[in-house]
Length: 113
Length: 108
Image: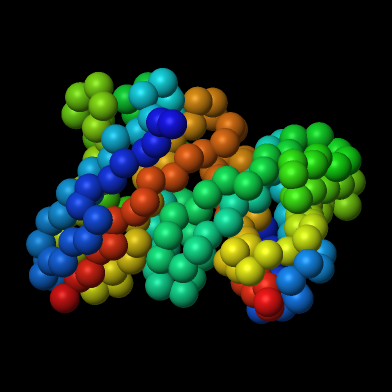
């Protein structure tokens, strides 16, 4: 069964460093998403991506964040200068249609020290 | 105003009972509704989607949607200890909005 994959599973970084989180969406899906979940809190939407551009983004997705689809399979989230409050689980998701079911990857747990 | 509201629980039911989870939403234009289950430290996994008013059944799970009253619910029949998790209500509008989740514990 096709699934969304994410790497790395865990990332520890120093405050101010750049991190890149990677995702491989399900192959026939066209819509890609990033979410974050701070420990004990709800899943929060960051950004959606379609046709090589951002279609929606939340207030959380400020200038320190960027997304890219560098090739036909990977979808990345870059955090330029990490802050302590960026520590969270980051989930990638993909869907076939814009309002269709989203399938989530296993997540990357980011810890900023 | 929160887009999606859920009772955070915790909700405890004995094994074999019916668990009832509820969710209300604010955007009348929402068309697609989803229930996800999330085990601690894991990613959300889809249980059911529902798009039209009424009930939709899938095994032990029944989703109910009432667009006029802006609520969606999930019933879990014959609850099992393995159903113990956080249940997330989500809807698709301009963004995909998740509720805060309801923690369910099924007591053996």
